[in-house]
Amino acid sequence: MVIKTLSRSIREYKLQSALTPLFMVGEVVLECFIPLIMAHLIDSIEAKAMTPVVRFGVILLGMAAVSLLCGTLSGRFAARAATGFARNLRRDLFYKVQDLSFGNIDKFSSAGLVTRLTTDVTNVQNAYMMLIRMAVRFPIMLVTALVMSFTIHVKMTLIFLCIAPVLAAGLALLIWKVYPMFDKVFKKYDELNDSVQENIKGMRVVKTYVREEHEKKKFERSAEEIRKTFTKAERIIALDNPLLWFCVFTAMLLISTLGAVIVVRSFGGYAGDTPVWGELSTGDIASLFTYIGQIFSSLMMLAMVLVMIIMATASARRIAEVLNEQVEITSPENAVTEVENGDVDFCGVDFKYSASAETDALSGIELHIKSGETVGIIGGTGSGKSSLVQMIPRLYDAHKGQVKVGGRDVKEYDLRALRDSVAMVLQKNLLFSGTVAENLRWGDKNATDEQIKEAASLACADEFVSAFPDKYDTYIEQGGSNVSGGQKQRLTIARALLKKPRILILDDSTSAVDTRTDALIRKAFREKIPGTTKIIIAQRIASVQEADRIVVMDNGRIDAVGTHDELIASNAIYREVYDSQNRDGGEE
Image (tube, rainbow, N blue to C red; front, side, top):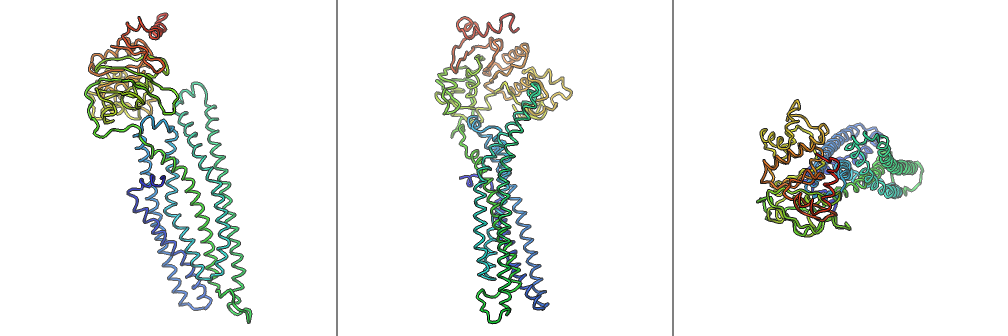
């Protein structure tokens, strides 16, 4: 299943992937024939005949040249195939992440996704190159070298067959010991990446609380665990080299001893002896020594290829988990592609973030919002305010009941059409590296400079942007780190307004601006976009008290709905919040 999933990313590199082992076979076969020709060359030198020496020398040069050409082409095609496969794999992973719903993404940590896109793909890339090149080279070399050895001397070749299983068994034991360590270490990579990402994102907090040493120690712990695991694995793998040379030298010693006896007997060294081991020349012994190296190095490298593949198996499985993840939220067949108006209806909605969650985040939600209406939502932390509005653009789906937009169930819409009609501005907003204008054009990539300026004016952002030396060409650092929290919020409100949405959702998105600016933004909304449905989540009563209706939420349920005056008179939760914010002067 994993192989089938990943093989889809080979695509246009199938030809290079096929040519790599083809040329590798040519290289290996020629390499294995060279020692056989060399044996004839050595025997010709002993016979003091120069004509065969020249002939065999020319043949050897030709074979070496062709072998070199095959190896070069194989390496070139392997590099193209592996790097192209890795590029496609990263692209497929990234595109898949873009299609995942919030519910899907919740299953994978952001650090885990980064590790999959970087370290895991690199491991799979290296394994793929080894697979199409070395995994072909060494088995063929092993088999061909054995066949050639048998053509030289059958009984001497049996020495290989007696010793090779010892090496194979030892290498198999090493691989069996090492695999669990590599499986474990990639989970440690996730923890390390998570530590780095968290530190970089929260650098201001780290420095404010002087927690640099704490963060360094946390990083060191993760890095040290990876080092220890890799060291332990490498220590075990290091045993393969002495094991290999023990087998090689044992084979060479036996062949040298027995071969010398056979050569002497072959040329009459012992009169009357019967050549029970057959005949063997000096050139044959030289060739057998070469084949010893080829056979045992093949076993050795084959083991290394297996280690690399096994090491990449954990990475491949993690990548396949993402690629095979079933997207929870998709567009239906014959989807509706136009949202008629900004009506929003919650009809008996229950919601929880995962099927295994013990309690619902929302339950029994019944709420009907008319197009163009301004609705405020008030509630304590964890009351379900954000969960409620995230179901409008289908970032999450209700587990029970219906959410309707424009009179239709949101599940009937094409996702792009639905989300284009809904603009959300979150409290923790994100600006991307680029100019102010480029960031605002996320709302409308074809927006003119005048439209950008108009949206910024509505969001009270034009005032400070115009004060920048480069105005709308001012460069915004990644994450908006070179603007204040209030400026960032106003820019993201302007970005949302450029979408010209039917529904505008402000999820506590004016918390970092002063009350005067907050009031100016709300006034602009009333006057400039009266037909847009506006849903405002806020902690400050002042941000919602002029709304057409205010929803009070408590513990995942709607506690009350009404105007400011109605709720002051009838709802204890709302009145308590209002009194606490206005006591001793409160907020002005």
